[in-house]
Length: 209
Image (tube, rainbow, N blue to C red; front, side, top):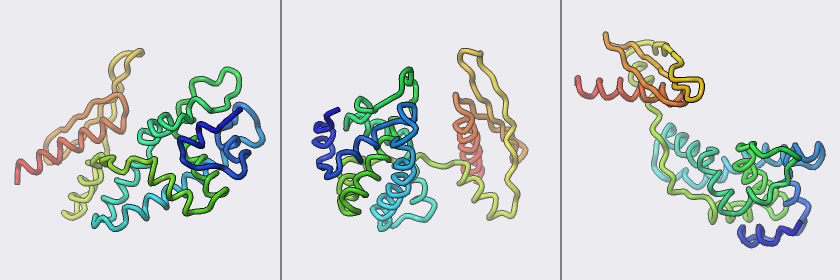
């Protein structure tokens, strides 16, 4: 397979073309020379590069952590991989067509391959040119609520979790009991429902102040 277009999109030419091929080869295609270990390594490299890039933004540790999580999340990396054409270049096993995790993971594996092939400076340049650092971190309402309660010396309550909706369209409901009130969040994912409940609790706190 010719990966010249991928190299052009990355603005990086591999000395060892085999590294790029390995970075785009899924475990479903072969047990050997797939991208699993490169993905593992790339995840750490990407976190370091992003951390260094945002370190001097004057934010708190918690804010920096949330921004880094937003920048290196699957949700953020998937469109980057697609824009670079990595999704279409993936070497998959027969029948492997629903592995959505493979798309953002390909970016991590490619960054690791570039680091091995050309060093840290090359990896930094590619990340800087391809990653969207304008991504806004989603507020961690659960974390903010926990900080508020800790300052007051109060324990963090457990969420009551209920599965609603239908088998075809399940909905998660999370309930939080605080200050004599019940705060409820509902979403397709449980973590989003919990965040919504915590957000409502924080809104109540601000209103009552």
